[in-house]
Length: 465
Image 1 (cartoon, rainbow, N blue to C red):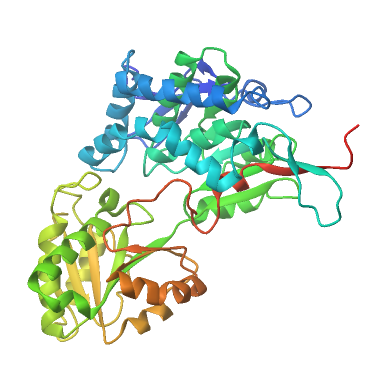
Image 2 (image 1 turned 60 degrees about the vertical axis):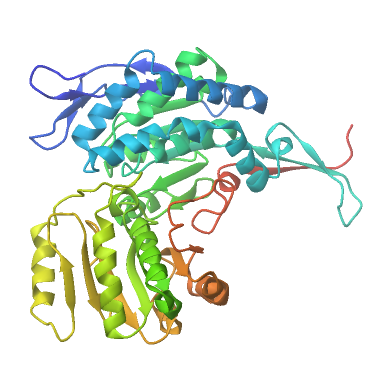
C-alpha cells in the first residue's frame, strides 16, 4: 500500500506475524519507501530455547508448503497480485519476465521436487527428522547423527523472485529459525510468501520460524547488533561483491558464511555446429535462450560465447544469434531494456574498428551481438552477446576461473571432453547448450549442496543408556 505522498509502505514479518508501520524511511527521492521500526526483540529468537520447528515432523512442514503453493496460485487476498505489481514498478526486470517468474513460484513448493533436494543433499528425511544411527563405524562404536536446525540470517538478492522462495523452502525444511533481509529491489515477494505460510498454517511452528525486515545494507549500527553468533549460526548471503565484503566483517567462529556470490557464465560451441544450416540455426536459438535467461540478469546467463570456425562461418552464426535474442521466452522478454550510454560508448568504439570487431543489432535492448577474437573488456549485459572466435575450444580453458558458474557446450561429446578440465579451472556447472536455465533442485549449487551447509551436522557418540 502507498502513502498519499507516493511513498511506498513496506511491511515486516516478525515470527510469522505481520508488522506494519512507517517509522523509518529509505530510498532515493523518486522511490522513497517506509518500513516499521526495527524491533530486534520481536524479530529474533532466544538461543537458550529451541526453535519453534526444531522437532516438527518433516511431513507436516511439507504439507504446509504444499498448501502455501495452492494459496499462491489462488491468491485469495490479492496479496500476490499486489506484490507482483509493486515488483514490476520497482524492479528493473522486464514486466513479462517478472510475471513469468511469479507464475512458477508455486511450482517451487512441489513436494517431489523438495524431497529430491532433501534426499540428494541431506541423505533423506531421517537426517532432519531426528537422530539416525551410523552403523558402519570402523571402531565398532555406536553413534548417531542429525542434520540439526540452524539459526540463519538470509541476505537475499532481488534480481529474481525465486531467490525468496528458495530461501524460504530451504529454511522451512531444515527446521531452523530464519531472518530474511529484504532486498531494496524486491521488497514484497518474501512478505507475500510468508503471509501465505501464515494464512494456511496460522501460528504454526513453521510460520513462527520466519521473520523478514528491511534495513540499509552495510548499516553498521544495525548489522553490528544482529550479525553475531549470539543470534545466528549461518549467514546465507546472496549478492554482489559489496554485500559479501560487508558480510565478511562479521564472520567469526560459530557464525559461518554460506555465500551465493556473483558468477559469470559462458558458452562453448564446437566446429560441429556448422555441419548443416539446420544445426547452426538450432544451436543459435539455444544459445540465445542461455543469453536471455531472466533478460541476462541471472548468474547462469551466458555472457561470452566461444566458437570454433572461420570468420565467415562465425559471422553467419552471429547474424542468426542476433535475430533470436529478441524472441519472447518464458524467462526472457522480446524487448529487453535499452543499452545505457556507458555501454553504447564502449560499443561505438568497437564499431570504429571493423578489422577487429563486427557488431549486429542496435541499442534498443532487442539484442546485440559483438564478434571478436578476444573477449571484450566490459561486462556484457542488457542482452549483449560477445561471440569470441577461437581456433580451438582448448583455448577457452584459460578464460575460466572460480567466478565461472555455468558453461553450456555444443556438441555433447565436447562437454564430456572438457568437463573435468573446466571443473579444475574453477567452473561449477557444465550443461548442454540451451540448458543454462534448467538448474535442477537436488544438484550442486555453485559447487556445494546448500541444504547441507545450512544445517549443523551433530554427532551423538557412545552407547545408548
